[in-house]
Length: 409
Image 1 (spheres, rainbow, N blue to C red):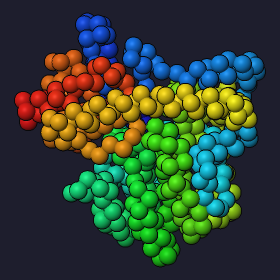
Image 2 (image 1 turned 45 degrees about the vertical axis):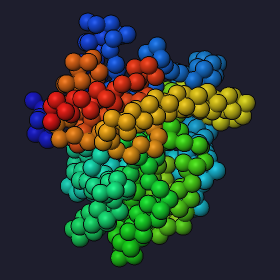
Image 3 (image 1 turned 90 degrees about the vertical axis):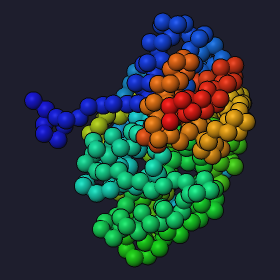
Image 4 (image 1 turned 135 degrees about the vertical axis):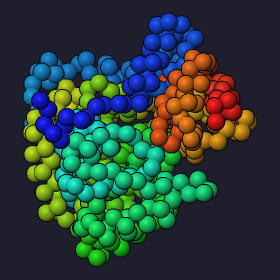
């Protein structure tokens, strides 16, 4: 009975499937014997969800009307101002800026793809990418294509990016590019400022030929990529770009505020043209009404209140720094032990995940199951979630991954 364009759709999500297998093993063997390196949330060393205490205490002070009432379609004005400030910190680019409340970062990505890529055409991202990009493209009538993220020296592959943009803009008049940085999912990689200079030179060269180019910067993990302003320095580069270049940011409350299930975020736009920003607000408001009508008011009210309470904000940022340092220590163990045992892994600069290239990722993960270690098999390798593995359990994982390669490939 499904429409022809939907009838063959079946969701196979490697992350949730790997986590389901892990939960089954936990039920059989006990949580203390199983290592869950699958999910993109921070777990404490007892395997419980790590929450920011200030978030919880401040959220609980909200009146019931803020938890139950509808929010405006575009979002609470104070929330939108807060989302913009939290996105840029001290690195706001020059130009016209607007925000639209969305169902977390996923909703922001949806709206970018729905409104800034032509139906039937290609959206460009790197070959290591979060699988939901492809699902959203399929859902909205677009196709996803990729460039090689890394060159032979494991640096950003500007040549591959350039070649792919050139190829696509020979047959398309517009292009949406998605770049997940810093703290890239699934590798932990981040573009340098020099990398961004190269990207923008390519973009501006095509804009000068009349092409319309939108860049979506997925910053879901940015607050786990390093010091707040250091990891945002690149954002000033998006000021005063040509009017046919639009920069978009997908802001998410899931990781930075440990409010994963509240599904609240924003799509933020930067342009040198006020008309482009006016259009952004209209088309995204239309999409909001069509897809979810309006967004979680309680989480918006929380962020607006936090934004105005400098004492609470300072406390929350201190708590988040502790969680960031915990994740970083776990990742450092893997990186050090990987170097020691000669395991090849992709350059990690921060964030929740580390990736290991593999020709047969499923086989590697299945071999790790023998040691009750559960990771995520991707197309190009396996993903290890440093965010969810305790310090104690992280020790020895790199060597076991290396052993899995020696036994399976």
